[in-house]
Length: 133
Image (cartoon, rainbow, N blue to C red; front, side, top):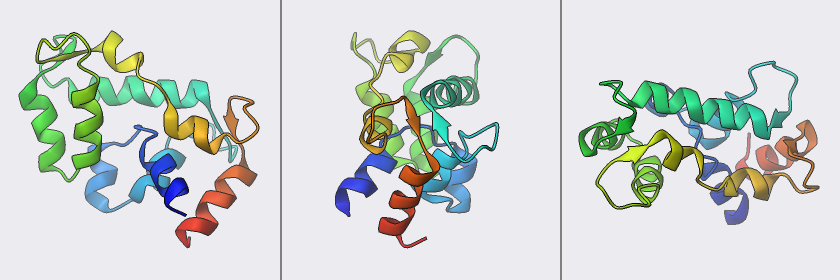
C-alpha cells in the first residue's frame, strides 16, 4: 500500500488549489486527465507539469524562486515543495522550466505497470483500491 501512496504522491502534478481543498494525491493525478477518458497519458502529465510551472511562476520570469516555492509549502504542499527544491539541479537557488520539466516521472512510471506511457483506468482502479476510494 505504501508503494501506491508514494507513487501517486510523486507524480508531481499537484496544484495549490487542489492541495488546499484536500483533493489528495490521487485527485491531483486524476486532474491531469484533461480529455476525461479515465486514463492519464505521459503527455497529459507533462502538460499538467507545464501548467503548474506557469501557475507557480508568479512573476513570470521563467524561474521558480525560493519565495515562489515557499508559497507552495504555505499552501500545504510540503512534499511538492521538496520535489521542486530537488529540481534545482544547477544549485542556483531557482528552478527553471527546463529543470522542472526534466525531472523524472517516477510516480507515473510506478503506476504505469505495463509501461505503455498511460496509466489506464484499471491501473487507477488499483491505486484507488489501495487508497480506499
